[in-house]
Amino acid sequence: MTPEFHEGIQLAIVGVGTVFAALIITGLLVGLIGRLAREKPPVPAMAAAPLPDVAYGGPDKHVLVLLAAAAAVAVKRPVRIRRVRFVSHRHAPASWAQAGRTDHAQESL
Image 1: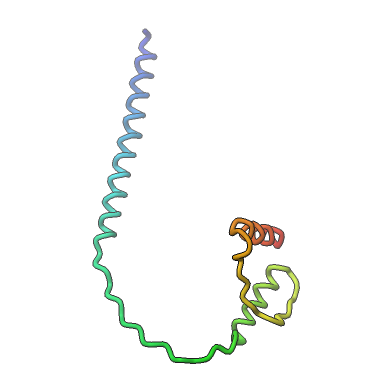
Image 2: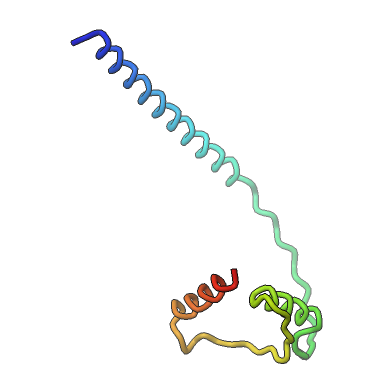
């Protein structure tokens, strides 16, 4: 075998060894950082005050403005919010509902 072949083999072994050493060091550092971040003591939660008993009067004006702005961005023209109601997707499988939302979002881009 020629000296160039031996030199090429040595270079390949050194290169692969260097890459594996760098990967091992990186893995150890990531594990160490994960352990350091996990060992923080939990922050005690404050007791929540009871909510006032208020009758729901529908969405306020700020929510309607945000809904109108989001709808205008989605359909790319001005819209008027006339009614707001909760729509349940229990009648349709979740995958169909997600596909419909995805199609609408892609069309509006």
